[in-house]
Length: 276
Image (cartoon, rainbow, N blue to C red; front, side):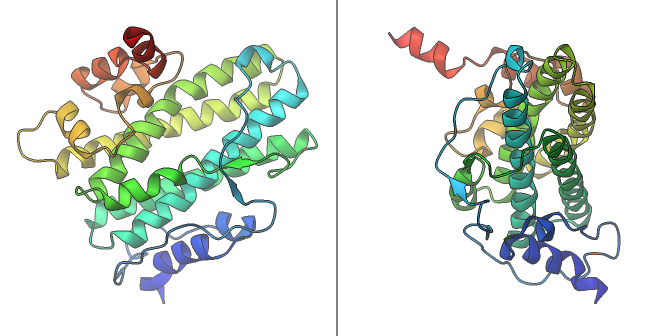
């Protein structure tokens, strides 16, 4: 039935382990959600052999290393897996909070669909290099934050702050940084993928910003609402990359106060140096 389509698609993404099942299109838009049903809590996604989540991964090659095909493959695989985890976590959120406002659920479903396409684009570039997802360990970094999001007292606001205003906001910087790295290495096709992901990430951050604001206590500033809802150990310092891009944040609708707070948040390394 059409009213069960989105729920069924989210269950498929989390309960089936094959990549094809996770990247199959999901319904979105008015009429695709209907009655979402009762909440469903899933602790971890099913993963096929070769796609299992690992406890960690080697450090990501820096942009200056992308002249090496192996470094490009490592980055593309890591980026594809980030997108795959995002696909799963948006499905997880849609199942966990079925009573969210319909426009927000439609926005989350649309974001999920975008993340599927981003994963496909990175995988296509990875396969052109003769590599595959799973050739190296796949870090479950995003999923490791799911228990803290699930137990946070602020419900879906915690998810919006973690995914949209932390991970996706940081990706506004990383996509541009690696776009330029791929371009300098002569891999224009991969640079264009990063550019497309960056452009669509702006809308994802905008969705999180809009609904975090609407669901926050009346009168709370964007920064205070974020700090209240984001689950530890996430925070402002993790919402940015090595090269900060304020323009894309402003296009996403983040307030000047929020942009400045993220820009000025000390990194872990800076904090450690200050304590030593």
